[in-house]
Image (cartoon, rainbow, N blue to C red; front, top):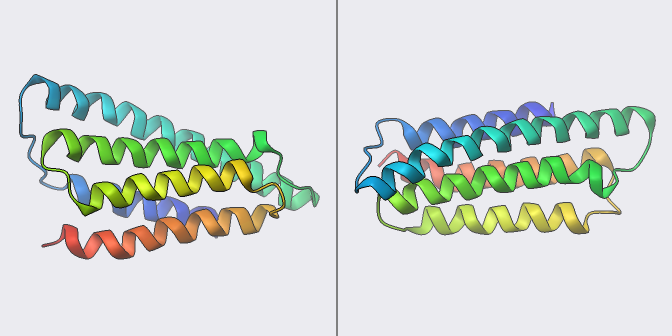
Length: 143
């Protein structure tokens, strides 16, 4: 269920941002927009592997190693960094960009320092950070 929550938050953040988003700027902005999507998709793929590692660890009663935590944490961080870079390059910087950067840093720090967390607790914290960001960001995106 927590993996689905992570996926749903990624979905809402992505599609609410890019729905009807015009690309402003020249070649550089268009380049960041196109290449940023490669990072978005790579981050999502890595995060899904991290969720699978957490499920396997929880089922076997093991703790998550750093190598188990990093795909989820780094995947979400890369996703959020790309989600911040695209609007940062194609329009003005705003609080949403800053929020994404802060959330990316928090998730990555949690992955690096979360050695004492159980697998479900780790995924729950990542999911809570994403849901919290969506709760703050989405009402602003609809304006």
